[in-house]
Amino acid sequence: MAEVKGGERLEQALRQIRDKVRKGAEVRVGFLENATYPDGTKVATVAAINNFGAPAAGIPARPFFSQMIARESPSWGEKFAEVLMQDDYDADAALEHMGDDIAAELRQSILEFSGAPLSPVTLLLRARFPTREGMTFADVMQARHDVATGDHLKKDGTLKKKDQTQATNPLVWSGNMLALVDREVK
Image (tube, rainbow, N blue to C red; front, side, top):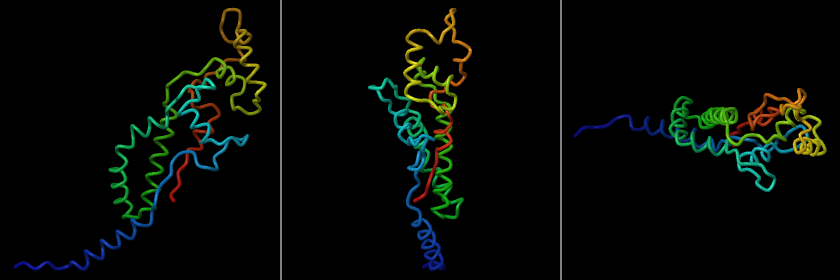
């Protein structure tokens, strides 16, 4: 009968791997609690409204986050297994790397999103307030009025020079939401 030797070393190696893997618990990716716009608005709130929409406010769903998860998540398990091996089974390091990858996928989803177009009022506000800074509710109401009456248009129906904008990605206005995609390992 054959005799197997070295089982103790294998068991020790497996215990070490087990202990490394047990350390990490989870990685969170998205818009974390402390992410806010300069006015204090939570980025997670704005992202959720964009993703799911707010029909009562006339905001259509722009499911950049949901679509990214549906598209990318089937490969995350396999990717994590590879990253875990590359990181010598250090779960915290592997979760950090996976979080970086998923955050990059989310940023790409924001940049490439091309769903429901922006309303004329939003386009007008973007032209008048390229970074959103200083924009008030009164400005929103003025833009609504100008669009309703055509006051933002020249006689030929094109936008007045001061009301033109090139920024038409519905998810990128000030760049804050894009810049504040983050991840953390807990």
